[in-house]
Length: 152
Image (tube, rainbow, N blue to C red):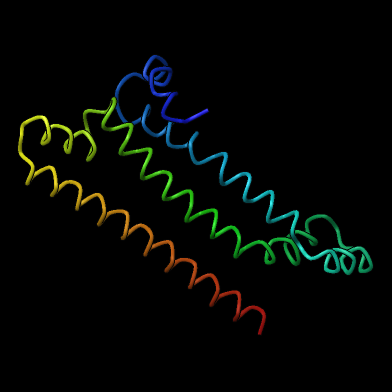
């Protein structure tokens, strides 16, 4: 079900505002991130799991020493996809139902026949998306560096 289709239901449950927007965005991000995380766990190298069984590791040791580090790169793919989905859905929810956001401001500028302001808001949304992606890449690099230090 498209998450945007839940806007009317979220409006009934949460009313207008940030809680409604956060609930729709969280729902939209939950499924892709969950599926990608599940796929990452399923794609852990079987030989690593054999080694864990041979060493009689507990479930926690198996996760913290083998599965966790093996899925980190794929988790960052899920994180960056989730961030992109969150921005798109948040702007869409703001256009449709939240009078306190960038999407709503862009629609007001469009309805006021002010294309310069509308394009400025569109550019700003693009800058925010670029900054969020850059932040996620920075975190990914820092985690990769840290994992390299731990492994060395």
